[in-house]
Length: 210
Image (cartoon, rainbow, N blue to C red; front, side, top):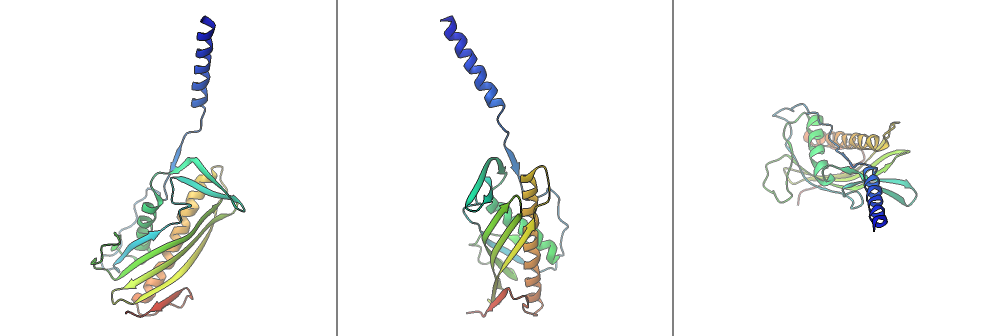
């Protein structure tokens, strides 16, 4: 009986040691914690009404592509907030800075009567992280003007990942820069339409109001 008790105690201690040695969960955010400069109160009014994400990346854990058809989903490296909530807010912030406008917001898709100059919808086709290469962001976008005219296009952004001992932290920082690049390109398209210049980038197409 004594030997049985000693054996159970030994197993319990081994279990506790194993649990204490497991890797802690780390949480990441695309936002860097810094407050952006306030834009002009006279800037264009833009509402981001919807952002769609691939189900592959719309999850708590960080996902990276290792090679070919293989993926790695890290249970120890997770998003502190769902990307479907982070990304619209981040794009609104970056668009506001790029347009020098304090009137760029996110809104529910059913808020049809929101008074804006442009309504922006995005469908993220691809958000892939390759730790040994970089981040690839591929987005379809649609912008509806106040008069009902629509222009749409596709923007691809490639962002390399800098050398770092913490590859996942570097990958998150590179994703942040990729979305910043997307916001800046969208701001250029919106600025052209706002000034009546039209798009000359080859990315955007116009559809007249119905």
